[in-house]
Image (cartoon, rainbow, N blue to C red; front, side):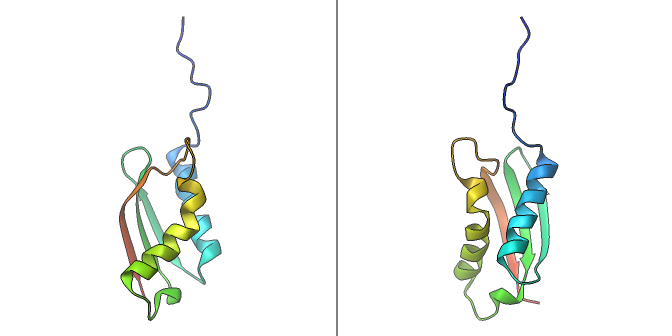
Length: 89
């Protein structure tokens, strides 16, 4: 009897693309770098004018708000953001 995976979910490249799209849709003209580490773990670097005048916590909240859908539910493709760097251009 062979092992069959019914729903393996999207691959890392597709998840990286989804993260980039979600952030790009939420922030004006961002520069986005996303790297996949262990499965479900990501490092994100975002440069956006939207961060100007905001604390680091507020900057991080903007990014997390953008990717909340990808981190929600039992089969969420994003398990953790191991590193989040927010920069002002």
